[in-house]
Image (cartoon, rainbow over all chains, first blue to last red):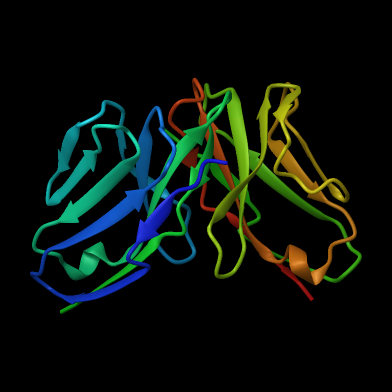
Length: 111
Length: 112
């Protein structure tokens, strides 16, 4: 069974601080995706990483895919209150690409 | 471009009633996935459909739950004889090639 473990589960920081969220697995994934979900809404896709060692930047967000394609990280620089939300990593399982999700990291950025 | 649409956004049912959740995928997308998010739990896969076919229903409870994606119209997730444990947020996602999934806003089901 392919599982994704996210850490930390909860993060509360001050505006302007940096943070990193981790997504780890013992299984190899063909790709990993990061989503952000706000209360009462569906997950919104932030990025898909496909190649081992890949780094993608989205403004203040930096996403890395591990060389062995078993882990990924999300780094946020100078966090802002608008970054508050639930961050989820997900990877496709088997044929059909159904997604398995990590439990998520709840981020709260205080002004 | 319209994204994935789900309705209703909120649904309240009494135990024993039926719940019907609708999902209209992004225009042109032929792959539909349903996921459930229980309170304090992560998103879990339920079923994967393509037009008129169920491809993978390995995540769906064997009883009371069914799904369809007809040639015309939205995908429907049907829950018969709902119980309190069915209370959850149900999300639909669509994809054009099964590679990148785009999620709808979800339907929050509350069973009284």
